[in-house]
Image (cartoon, rainbow, N blue to C red; front, side, top):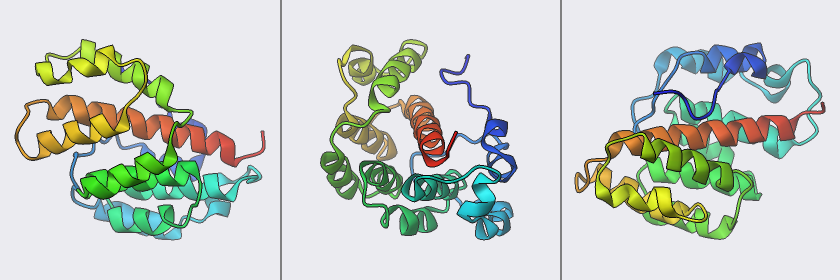
Length: 194
C-alpha cells in the first residue's frame, strides 16, 4: 500500500535521521523499547537535534524529543518530556503516549483538553484513505465518514482492538503511525527558524 504521508527522515537533520531511519509500525500498546536506540536518545539535546538550525520554539523542539522517544517505544521517557510542555501540542503527545500505555481514560482527558489541533484535518483525510484501502471491520466505517477527526472515537477503537474485541489492529496501527508522522513534522517546522 502506498504511504498516505511520504515521510523522509533525512529532511529533519542527521540526529533525527539516525533515530528515524528504521521504519517502525509501533504497536497500539506499549511495545518493547528499542534498546539499540537508547544511547543515541540519551545524547539527544535540542541543540544537537536541530543543528544547524536556530530553535525559535523550545516547546515544539521538546515535542520532537518526546516524539522520538515514543517512536522507539520508550513511553516513560516520552511522558517525562511531554508532561512538561503546557501547550496544545504537548497535550497531543501526552494523550498519544497514554493511549499507548494503555491508559485510555487519561488519554481522553488530554485530548478533551486540547480541543482542535492543526493536524486533525490532514489526519482525518489520511485516516479515511487508509480505511478505504483496508478490509477492516465494519466498526471502522466511521473513519471514512467523519466530517472532522474524533480522537476520542479513535481511542475507543484502539482500546477495543487491544482488548481483542475488534479485528482492526493493523488499520489502527497505520493510522497511529500517520498521526505520529504528521505531528512530528508539524512540531519540527514550528520549532526552527526557516
